[in-house]
Image 1 (cartoon, chains in turn red, cyan):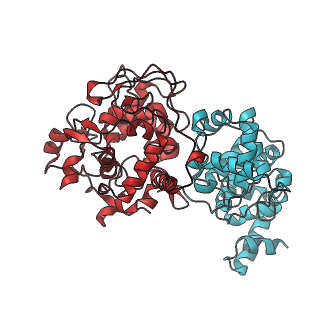
Image 2 (cartoon, chains in turn yellow, purple):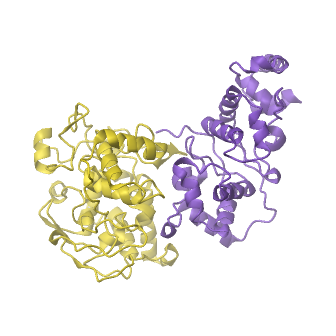
Image 3 (cartoon, helix red, strand yellow):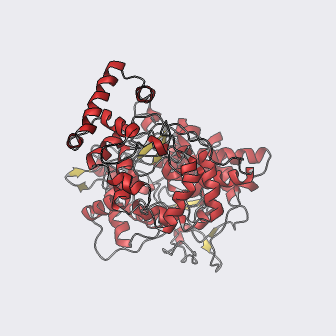
Length: 325
Length: 240
């Protein structure tokens, strides 16, 4: 099965690990030199983040229609790519402003970085293959086949957003920022306090988000309707970067590095759907895909061995999971 | 007259029950001490239509016969509002953190139990949109600009889309994010200005006072005009 082997751990990797050391959201500072693995040359010294074109400039032709379709899929994934989506999340939950916002893994930062070698699956991945990983892991669904209209529409949108961006350059603001390790080791209990104070008003005291008018307004952060154990957001370092730059929504950059690490540890210290690459046992799966201190999969948190009680991956795409309500 | 209004608000309620509820309410207002207990929905309905014995006027006198809000009074629609949100606002009026010369004495005249009962009662009512407060519709460009802010925000200036917290079309989400849909533009603009002036609490996490500081007067006018034209929806718990 091609897709199961071609898509590696959706963790940050190339998309996120580009090494843009955390900088204030505004104004953006030049990215730090990317690690060799990113296979991209350093951006020319430029203090400003790339600015994608305005929606009003989407052309009124066949290509423009595809771009708009991609944007719809990106913002209302469960509605427009239902067949590949196994939870109630949308691409735009983790790629804010419909994939435009710097330091929120913007599409324009990703598009110009592929094809790229990914150490996670030890081969060169195209941009469509990278997006297959998003569906399989972050959307807890299944990968659309290469060339599927869903991937073509998303690729068209990403390409159009990248209008004028240099190719194969680690643009400032791509991926999520890398938050320095805090003074104290990240802690679940402290993270719970951060969550209660800063996050629960939107995501709910149980982290399951909130719905209104039939739509998921605030996304569930763990549990069967969230991303699965293979997703990049399940990596604490990656989640800390997203949180530090973007959370609470509209107040990005206000949490301390310590708070960001602690609350990321709290979020990623909960059970969620099984890693689709599950290798028979939690121990073996951890050894293969979750080595290192930034994945809590296969570790015991609050007396629970994470991964041992995970629901099967695939959610509503299995026909057995809870469908989007 | 009163009976008719009650029937209108609660059409499912049998008339006999309504009558006995009215009697109970009259008894409650005759004996103010009784209102200090646990007021019922009927007691809350009485406050809505008659006020209470401690001087709270009927809610309908300023919020309209269907509690839909009256633009001329810059009063919001409160029918279908989240119970916890209503209680929090009444507490804020009484405590002076939401500064409003009309609502300060009203909220002060309501006991904590009455505020709770009112919140619960209002959350059960069907929301009705306020009539348009701007006599002539604003230019299409203004509405487009309002729609853009409401549905996409202006992230380059750090402003999320209003819908990202207040729900699709501004229907409201849970207790912390009240409905914007179908509120008069006069009321919405006044609230955004109040956040800016610091005359109402800054909202959860201080979000509203922060975000409004990133908005212009034109933004406030545009987004208020847009939401006035969105259909309101019944209160939801906001939970999964």
